[in-house]
Length: 74
Image (tube, one colour):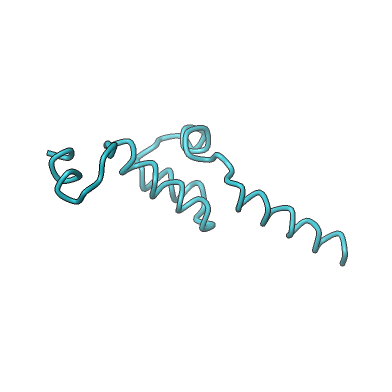
């Protein structure tokens, strides 16, 4: 059913994992607390959420370094 809906939408390679991973990663990158994301995903332990979805994108890494630079300048 998922593949059919994805095909009709002109998307390929969409899986249940993609439908779960994309919003989880976006929430974390948007600053939603890891605890809130874990709760939304139904994880009993936030370590699961952090290990699976807590990778750092280039944009997030840059933002972290810019924040650090600002702190050091203060």
